[in-house]
Image (cartoon, rainbow, N blue to C red; front, side):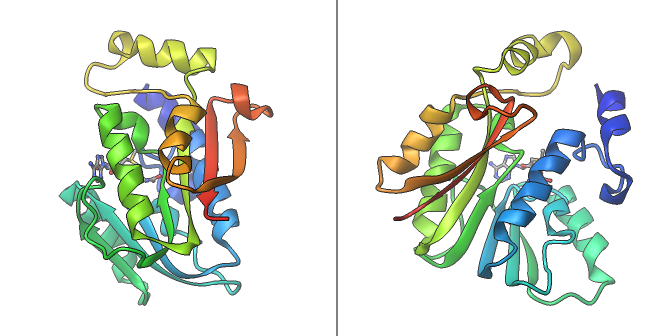
Length: 212
Ligand SMILES: C[S@@+](CC[C@H](N)C(=O)[O-])C[C@H]1O[C@@H](n2cnc3c(N)ncnc32)[C@H](O)[C@@H]1O
């Protein structure tokens, strides 16, 4: 599986194992969605910081903070950006379920390519609740759903033990994850299918949620 991922990864994403084609597309779409915004962007489960590549443009004045539970990934992120004299960029060690930020302090809260590796749905729910807590009322939240209605996702996740022994893969429906936020008064602003043109059946659905 690693060989397949490597061969599908983009050279400008450092050929890294987290840079397969779908993850690349998700990051590219997220960059488009935030391109005209300013303020504080939080990247939950930032890994080695690939989202930050090409995120800052002339159209935005985003300040970026990436959090991750894994020290090694954060070190890779730090090392890859530190020689570029960038300001407004920080990486912090923290757990997604317990974000070290004040209520309503973040303009854009993002968590991508991460929920499907969490061991339990309760971790995803807690993370979404934390993202909602820290997000400003005029801000928004973006996350992706590995869609269990898609047969390829369903089968490849269900039988993951056959081709990969040490990875956790959990798929969800769009509704079960968006309900966590819509039950708190947020609305779905956009659903973007990735990998198939119809969101309901796409392997991945990128979701933008905010207040009215
Ligand atoms: C597949 S990587 C995705 C990285 C990044 N979001 C991207 O798209 O390039 C998932 C990341 O989530 C991190 N992670 C897993 N569980 C976490 C948790 N509970 N809190 C914070 N980070 C976590 C992992 O360490 C890993 O770096």
